[in-house]
Image (cartoon, rainbow, N blue to C red; front, side, top):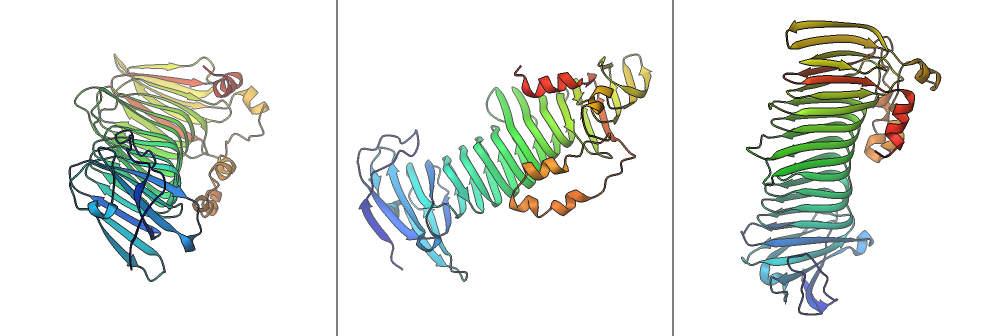
Length: 413
């Protein structure tokens, strides 16, 4: 099959590194394909821009253009070896392998529904608009940026760089790995695995606006210097954090359960629980201070360990007990009941059921397949449980009033 090299189309800005293009036209390679593989193993820089377009699959073409570091358009086939394979399912695969060691900016205009496999030794990958399909991007040195990615599997990994998701990643399985932190507005998955590296900056802060996941695991390795923080806006489902040396973990809203464990010597945690089901269990085990707040309309059993235990004045205890194990260490156990005004103001029977809220929030094809799993009966006789263990810090527990809970949600601090 012959590859067509056309000289047409005005050049587009690809990256800040190669933003000046001396020519108003560039060499364009076009070929039908719905699967694209790109490998660049040399140490020179390869910046890749992915531009998805909505076109019928029957006429789907991948168009590739390249520029040198000086901004001159160059024939793609001078820099890359191209192979075309036809699959038994009728889909065409296009494979590009870089063969010349030169700094280059590459633009791939491809169908919105596409399978991508990109491996770079040095360079950044930027994805515009929405890409749908199995997507794998592995970068040794460079950033990965995307707007919206959907597919069965999404895999982003950079050993020396960051991951930046402007809008959404939605997949059955998500894998993120980044040395210099992750910024993600929304993550939706059945199973999500996130690995945070040591980072090169003085401060590395990874932020997730919202995580909707049946199970999301975040791990972080210890840094030799600087500060490392994790901030999650909303958790819907189950979040597990297993880290070594994080300075802080902040979770603004939990609708479900969390398990946070840090093996460092100073991590402090702030978390607020908005809703949970009976017989669920959350735990926080760190060395630093822990501050936990709860919405007022559901019961919970708590066990708190710390150098100092403080409970808010609005906590409605059914029973409580304080054991002073040592002069500077205490164990507090209690059963919290729903505040009277909160019970009157809701239709709840003492249990906050997040199932219907999850179905509304997680309305995606792969989540709806598991709707039946959300219908499992919970034991209403057993309240949920919270275990907090701070090795060298103080623990504070607050049960917000009905009004304070509303203010917290809707009044900007």
